[in-house]
Image (tube, rainbow, N blue to C red):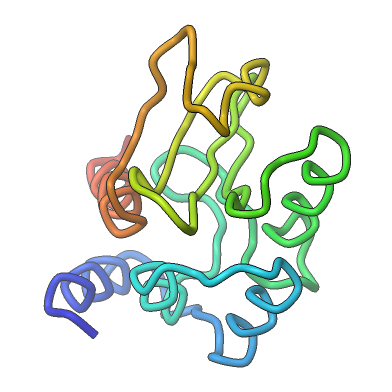
Length: 148
């Protein structure tokens, strides 16, 4: 684990208990979604498994808690043809936060009505973007520390 991720872990554990996922649970996400999760996501998932952080509800990483990233990703793949490289992280009002498992920026928060523009990233309203999952997590962890 990198020093940066260790710092994020320590900051998170100062607020909440270590409630991460096991390697088996992370491997199950990859298997069920047929995707390779970014390294920073895997490392952060070792101490954070979704839930409220920084004022938004992040979907659970565990498949036995609803809603979760597996069921929401599969639902959108089926209903709106979400491309396979995207994993749904959260669904704040009228928007969607996804993680691109292949390209950067890795995390994109955009207006949900523009989901058909996601593959080409041709949004009419500029989305919020983070280069890595750890950048995204760090921003919401900071919001949480500041009481958002």
